[in-house]
Image 1 (tube, rainbow, N blue to C red):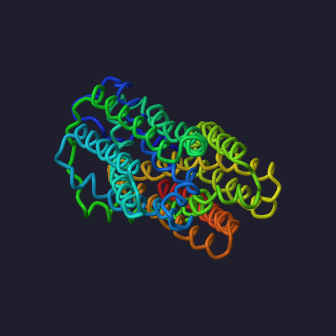
Image 2 (image 1 turned 30 degrees about the vertical axis):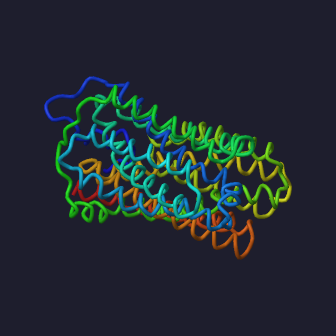
Length: 413
């Protein structure tokens, strides 16, 4: 009988060439810092969108396409980076990606028009997609097999910490010092991550050379395909709602800047605990983490649509939303990689690519909805998309439950 738990699947991982490596925890922490730096830069536009749009003289929906630009390029960079850099030392590849992040933040700081901002965000997409596609696979190489779950959980903690800090700090700094100052801080964080990786990551020669054809083979595996579809649904809904959450808090809930900052801080803090909850569920079944996260997002987004004009309800719903979203990345990553342990980089690339497509789709749909139907239309789409994701995962789990006894009976026969 097949087991859906991550712990059982890890027994199949082939990450060492001669013997298992000693634990290189400083390198894992450096990867976590890289994740934190990238996600901080990725999430900042949502918290500074209003002043950014006003400064560049464009609509909020147009400014939101800075998120789209990052996501589109990230979608291509994620699967292509492991293939195009397959013969290079993975340490050098990661350092190169962090250098691109530094250039992106520098351009953003001095952007004087939307096209310049979009170029900067394109560079961020290249760094983000490439880094995310390889981070989990490299983390698996830095520690012994028994420590892989702990290493992956630590790497994903970078997402939670960035979520806690990026949005509220971005909103506060943009109001006091200007939106560009927020990206100065992000640039400093990125340079610190680059230095940490240069000092701690060992040489990581490629263990194999991924091929483009392998992407198709991995994507056709049923469990991987289901995970990718789930990402398209749930993550597009999240980013349609969250990218344009500041207009909702301002125009619908009537919150001032201080209350918005506190609400975004609560979103992030809740996300830290959501990451812990997701990690606990992943050990049993990665799909449980997705079910919990998507289900709570559907409820929270629906509450904002129905009762968002009441400030404390909007803030509470956003806090629940933050808890729920943090459960999703580790759940989807574990679901996909546990179904393709023999092609971890390719599975990570496909998942990251699909994430970026979903982010772009959400940002585009959210911008169109907000500009045409008002700010509440974006969380309305988020609720619908998250609910569709829940239905999908329930169907997959039900199918797997039916298939398991049949497979056991055939084995017995």
